[in-house]
Length: 57
Image (cartoon, rainbow, N blue to C red; front, top):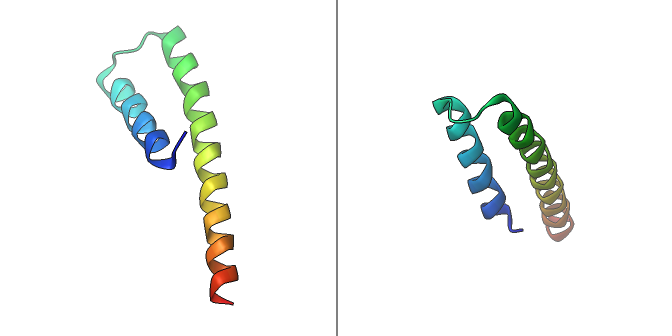
């Protein structure tokens, strides 16, 4: 999954939560998905940051 797709999915999850569109079971499932997406995004950003630092060194 691309970084932009992960961010879009996270935004959709947040929007559903803010609108109260999820029951407790759906919310738990979406929170787990959001957690995975955040981890993936953080890893991707860390790698890009390291790559940029290497290029600039």
